[in-house]
Length: 136
View (cartoon, rainbow, N blue to C red):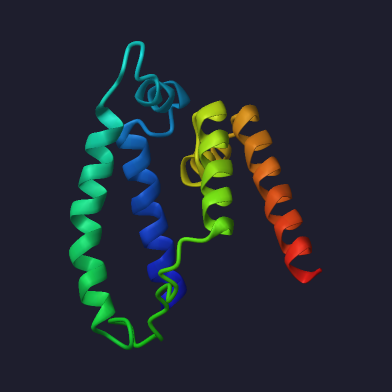
């Protein structure tokens, strides 16, 4: 049942990305272009996500299991360390260069976009390098 609910949540998330235009790299790059033709629409999408997420996470923190009876798995660390900062910088650089982050990239790659497929391949390679470094 958890897999089915996860698939439905992923579908709703993907559809939300499509409807909001966040699968269009030009729209994201327009948001990041503060000195040019700035497009504030991503700020509204983020604001909507925060408005939904804050109460949901507040509720989740008070629970030990999900509504489906699965174990609640929330991040435990509140430390901002070098690894977090470096990872955030790498994420931001990739986001700024490509105009995509992982969620939208998967949606666009699923539609067969060659650039998004390259982005996803590079993302998976980066994840593999991270795992390899973690094991060392």
